Every structure is written in structure tokens, then in C-alpha cells.
Image (cartoon, rainbow, N blue to C red):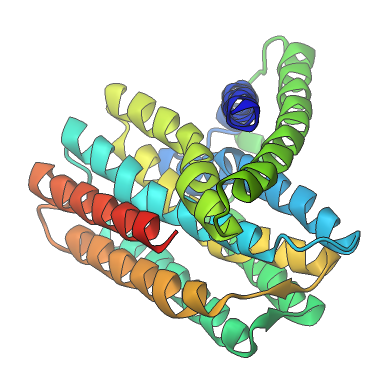
Length: 312
């Protein structure tokens, strides 16, 4: 079980370094007086998804070298989405009342659902080509541009002094470096573990790595709830899922075309779409997401994990 130990060690390093990078990134965001929701959906979402991005790119390099990690890459992306909306949002909802302005639900919810539909269409032939990967990456780039334009994040006239600026940037870069190193350990160990257990790569990608790389979101969301910043928690999770369905798969397929397993396309992706619709319905109601809704999400997430375990 050395592979499992190394996998957990790598995940631990990735989670710790992500928190280090995020703490410093938030200080920089505060320097520009950005809103809580923007920090959540724009900054924290990208920051907490660094593990998924780097793990996927690392695995794609193995594809380029003649390996086959497609199921692992796609499974990791979808598993992270399930973990964030099922596990993380469920836990956060048990800790407090989660709400989201309807204008945000409509804008970002529609973007998330559209991203899933785009991925479903792209995967119909069982392959994500480099051109299709470029479409996914450009789509996410346009979304980020929309976020910055809406927030006015480039307006430096609102900036305030950034104390110990060089230490903050050094901490950010150090965190990113450890994420890259930790992701290499995660990919190596996960692929060996799949071989050792004789299970599909998608199972390890979804159940172990996908959930493991959702731990930064869990940490950030719980911290935001404890500080009575529910909008930051919700923004983080919604933004993370938009990123996960577009960027990791898009970047990986730019490096080497990805296979898209029929089971992932016709079961996991539609199931994620249905879960997302349910979450958006919760937020469209006046009461938002409270303990009852949170328990529903945790129940659905647990059922999904059981199904994946039986499928393995």
C-alpha cells in the first residue's frame, strides 16, 4: 500500500500549498478592494482548482509520451465537481444558510450548465481533439474576461497599500511550486494504485483524487462560513465547477487528444448536470440552501460514490 501512502502524502502537500498560495492571493485581491463574490468565483475558484489543473496537465504529458491517462483526467475533473457541489456545499450548508443573488444564479448557473452541455457535445465521438480543447479553454477565458469586466478589477485607483509585498508574492510562488511537485506524486501514485487494484483510472480519478483535490474548496468554504462570508463560499464553489468542466480537460487535450469514455459521458456527466440543476433551483428560491437542502446534497453525493464503487 505504499502507492496509497504516497498518494495521500501528495494530496496533503497539494492541499497545504494551495492554502498557502490562496492566503497570499486573497491579500493581493484585498489590495484592489474586490468584492467577496468576485474573490470567490474569480480568484479562489482558480486558486483552489490549481491541483486539478496541474494534475491534469501532468497526466496529459504522460499521454503525449505514449501513455493513456484519459479516463483519469476526465474522471478527476468530474469527480471534483461532484465533490464540490455534493460534499463541500453540503457541509457548508450544514454550518449556515447559503444564499446567492438571483442575478448571479442566472448568469453563473447558466454558464455552468452551458459548459457541461458543451463538454457533452464535444465528447460525442469519444475523443476531445486539440481543436475542441482550444474551444473549452477559450470559453473559460471569455468567462474570466466577463468577470473582470463586471467587477472593474483592473481599476487600480481603488488599490490600497500592500504591506510586505515581496513576502506575499514569495509565499504565492512557493505555494504554486509545491502544488506542481505534489501533483507529480499524486499522478504517479494514482495510476499505480489503479493498476494494483485492477480498477479503471476513472474510479481513482473520481473517488480518490477528485475528492482529494476538492479539499482546498472544503477548507476555504468552511473558513468563509466561520467568518460569515457565505457569498464567498458559494462563489468559490460555483466558479470552481465552471473551471473544472472547461479548463483541466481543455488544457490536457491541447497537450494530447483525450479519449472520452462512454460511461463518463452518458452517466457521470448527466448526473452532474442534474445535481447542478438541483443546486441552482435551491438558490433560486428565497430560502436558499439550508440544512434540509444540505442533507439532500450529501445524500445524493453518498449514493453517487456507492454507485461508482459497485461499478469498479
